[in-house]
Length: 381
Image (tube, rainbow, N blue to C red):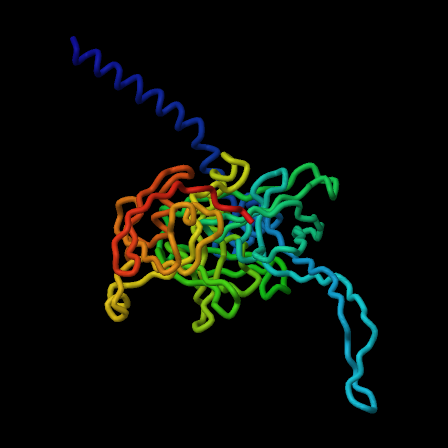
């Protein structure tokens, strides 16, 4: 009896399937007879690298901006060459000078812009944001992340009577692969706005040092993305995008000694900064208040010192000064962790929380001294 019931069920399913197939068979056969020349062009899409780039740029292009620096008028004397040598002309004032200094992209509809901290590192000047459709906005506030080479700019979208801006879509940089196709967009050389270049991810987890002592700043960046997509001065702060149009990095640096070697901060660092900013209305990062150089074990032995962070300067009224730290101290332990090349002081500070009390061990004039500091909040400016 059970076998008969199963057989009847199978027969019913076969009849249902045949009925459905018979209903679509004529139209399917007719489609096979249709010449390819008669197929509507709007129903055909050839997918290739070129079409991917075009689609991505079309979607994300309106969200990429140029950062402009406005230098105030400079008052002073000018000199000219006369019959008796150089003569001084009356004091005069020049006009404001504007220059394209970097790139950025829209994070929120109400006018929060992301760029690199080093792009807007100069204080005492005004900044503007120029969108892809050449609308100019004055930057009302600059927020600089003390931990990363990231800064947020706030503009007033009502300045140009816009209702909203178009924000980018942030991707995930934790699952990137070497060889993955990427697109870089930015103001190349501070002159060519919305320049598009393509390439691949050449390496992951790189550690680089940006800037130079001659430029007045040096910053060490860890876990950055290496790409061969052409990145030039002026591209800094612009987006590095995947084939889905998602931002997976922030173009940050280019190798001056090589070709097709550029670097970008992973977007997950930006997402962490954005969360910190949204939670606090500004960047709230743990702060000790020292400048230092790392002494490796070899360097320390050569100078009859110990491995650790050699304190060069202490900020007045900072947690470091309050704790009793002094210049020429060498911090050998911070929060119970040995300070070394693999555990740099900045990394250890970043792992703590604002207001957290931390035990510090220093070497001072050959003596071991135990101190403690309550970490403050790093200034945003």
